[in-house]
Image (cartoon, rainbow, N blue to C red; front, side, top):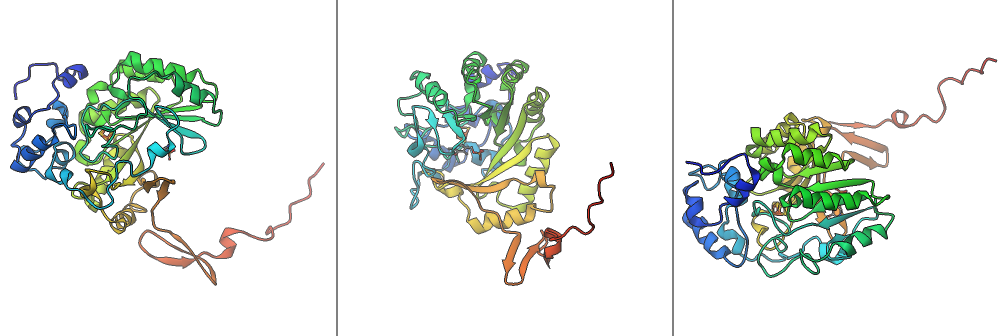
Length: 375
Ligand SMILES: *Cc1c(COP(=O)(O)O)cnc(C)c1O
Ligand code: SF4
C-alpha cells in the first residue's frame, strides 16, 4: 500500500479515514456480507476506520477480530428481542446536556458524539450513529456553562469522567479548556478520560498531549483494548507516553462473542496489557443494545472465563467482570467465600475447598497479655 500522507500524524490519519467501500477494498478483501452491511449503514450507523487500525486487519479473513470490531456486518441490522437504545439507562440519569449523575460521588460528562473508529460493538450506538438519536439533551454544540454549573453546584462530585464518543478526537486546545475549567472547581478531586484512541489512533497520543494532560493531575485514563492483536508497538508507545507523564492507564474490555470469548485470547489480552503496564480494570458483559446483540455472550460463559483468569494471573491482571444496569455496575464474578451452618468455607481458583477456621479470621482473646509498660 503506497502512502500519500504522514503515517505518524494523527490529523492526517483522521483526514484519511476510510469511510467508503472502495477505500476499504484497498486494505482488505471485503466480503460480500461486509459490502452489503456497508451499504446498509448509510444514514443509519456511522462507520469509519483509521488507516492505522485498518493496517491491523487480516486481508482475507472476515473473522479477524480487528475486522469484526470495525467493519460493519449484516448482523447489526437484525433486531433482537429486548435490544434497547439505552440499555444502561444513561439518559435517565442525565442532569444537563452532558452530565450523567448516577453514583453519589462521580459523574460522567459526554464530550462528543464523534469517534476515530466507530466500534461495531459500541454500547452507545444510538449516541454515536445516525439513528436520529443522541444522549445529549441539546446536542454537542450547546454551551458547556450549564454542565460546569451543575458540577460546581454539587460539592459531592469528586470524580469527573470525560467520555463520549471519544474525547481525544478534540484538539489539545479544546480539551485543555475543558480540563482547566474542571480543575478550577475545588471539590473535583480526580479527572478521568475514557478513550479508545490509544487503540485505534495511537498517533494522537503525542508528547504535547501527554504533557498537557499532566498539568491537570490527578488524571486517569481508561482505554479499551479488546483483543491482543490490538496491542501493537504503536499502541504500547502511546500508553508509555501517558505513563511517563504520570497518567495511570487502565483498560476496560467488553466480552464479545467470536472476538475474545475464549480463555486463551482473554488470558493473552490480560498478560499483554500487563507487559505494556496497562492495568485491566473492568470486563464488561456486552449490553443488549440496538445493533450489538450479536456480540452478547451468556453470563455463564463470562463467569467461566473469569474462573480461568482469577488465580492463574496476578490479582492486578484480572479485571472485574461487571454488567452495567440502570442500577449501576453489578459485579458478576463467582463467589469464593461461602457460608453454611458450620461456618465459612473457601474455594481457591482450582476449585479446592477448605473450611476457614474461625481462629484464622478473628481471635477472641489476645494470645499473650500485653506486657506492662515500663516507666
Ligand atoms: C461506569 C460509570 C461511572 C464510573 O464508574 P466506576 O466504577 O467508578 O469506574 C460513572 N457514572 C456512570 C453513569 C457510569 O456508567
Ligand atoms: S470509541 Fe467508544 S464511544 Fe466510540 S464507538 Fe468505540 S466504544 Fe463507542
